[in-house]
Image (cartoon, rainbow, N blue to C red; front, side, top):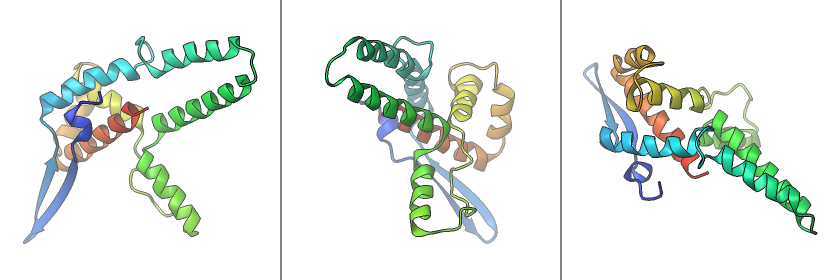
Amino acid sequence: MSESTVLSHNSGVSINVNDGAELVIGDFPAKEAIRRTTVLFRQMASTQEPASYSQVRKVIGQIAHQHHDEHRDQRLEIQRHWNRAHGQLNAHLLTAMADRRALERLGAHPNLPVPGEDVKPQEVLSLFQYGDLIHWDRHAEAFQEIADDDFQHKWQTLNFLSVMTQLSHF
């Protein structure tokens, strides 16, 4: 994953309006590169896969509990922090969490919307994995609805790449 051009690509969406005509431009890696990275990513992210965080954390947790030395409590606490961070990254976009924290520290009103707070990483992953890139069954219809809207397709692709990037670094 560390060599993936998808994860290092500076993806983005821009909207240009000229004389009332809207042009949505997506800057993404080639779809086939995204598909390849998605398959590799799924091996790390799917809880059923042996290389997933869920499986690895179980092994680490068992070892941490078995060894009763002076660092045991510290190891268990570190694992709790990692597990909490993993849960948060699976539930929210990192950029949205960081923006929300910055706004809170600045004293902004809590109802102020933050871009990306509506993104649910597991839903976005499932939509692309089971509606287009790997399988074409569970979410094919929902994916097609998004694909039919040029802006939504590009925006959701950006969300998908953001989610995959943040979770692949975990």
